[in-house]
Length: 190
Image 1 (cartoon, rainbow, N blue to C red):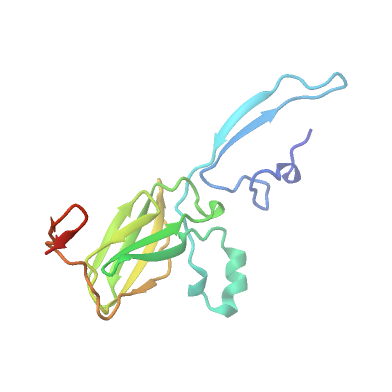
Image 2: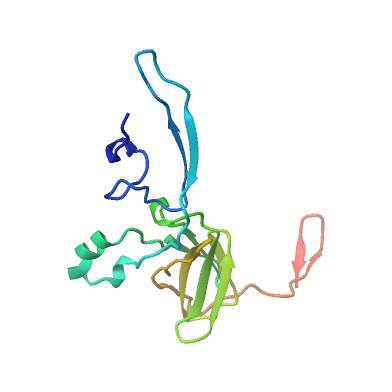
């Protein structure tokens, strides 16, 4: 059987029929066939080299250039679906999903998370999970977070800045709280 681009529909190929997905392991099995049936299979394993999650987020592109940008770009690469949840008024958990499989260019090893005040210092974290927690946030401040993914070949593009705003008057949990039992069913909180 002649192997053509049409026969390779189960793996990503470019316009020349070459495998174009990066960081993916493939198993090729080839067997001759005649009027008696199939012969013994020859098996070959191939892993495509990894690349850096690459490209640019769409929102940085002018709408008039969108079509040509989409046509010329193979991979986009930044993490997706950023979500923020305040655990307390001054502690926030940021979570995200990895880039879609076609845009990873290999195995994601870690994420780089940059968290900073709109007008101030920044904190960078390298994490291997899709969540990071930041604490000691100041009241009535705007913070930004950006995330990028990394493969063995390097770091991909950052997500767009995601804005986080803290409350104007944050009520913090009291510290040095003590409780003393006054009976079997009551306590006195000091």
